[in-house]
Length: 278
Image 1 (cartoon, rainbow, N blue to C red):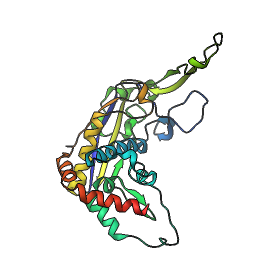
Image 2: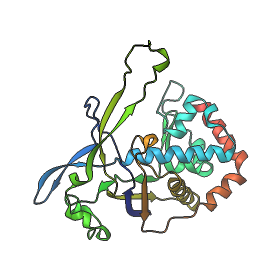
Image 3: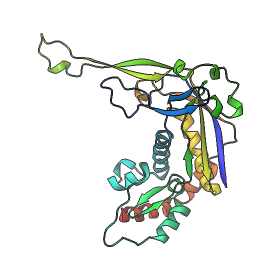
Image 4: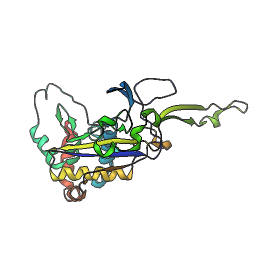
């Protein structure tokens, strides 16, 4: 069974989500071409779902280790990578073709954060159960793809480029102490393309075939997102703040938090076992 949570995000500050094109010191928004009836091909700026998923994964995993009382900065690099980035598939002569079913079972049953987000451990992939949609602007070009609850939004009358602008930041003069007395300061201004405050995005999450514990992890993830509601890049300089709302009832986090506190020893044993494999 797949449960989908549809809603919207509203930009409270400028949002920058960089594209793959290199444009010198002026980064542009990530875009993708899409075909719109009556308009043709449109270059649509958006926020990639993988970037949102990665940000949420990191805050969930940091919270997970905090509750366990483990300093995540003391984890081995490979173990840290498994939890915070998903790990990487590896194989050697001793493991090729061998799947550790018992370890998979323990991870599914005892480490719900990995079961929800998925990971690669050694030569095996554990599929995640969380899907995260791209965040597309509510605008004229995307109106036909929007759910009914957003089609009457006045932003649907405006072109997507009405919600894009340029902003900038400067690099401070870190070399001040090392400059000669008559030497000029060297500072750099960086212009970048961004979504303007007030831009609304259509967004969704989906969780598939989850048990009550994994569903509770999803609910806790949304709670953590509310505490740090940022998407895109350069949040440290004021970008990326959003407010958001999903139409379906979000699961509560109590089941997950109670489980972690009551099973610390079992969970840490599995983490130790994972560290011996990666």
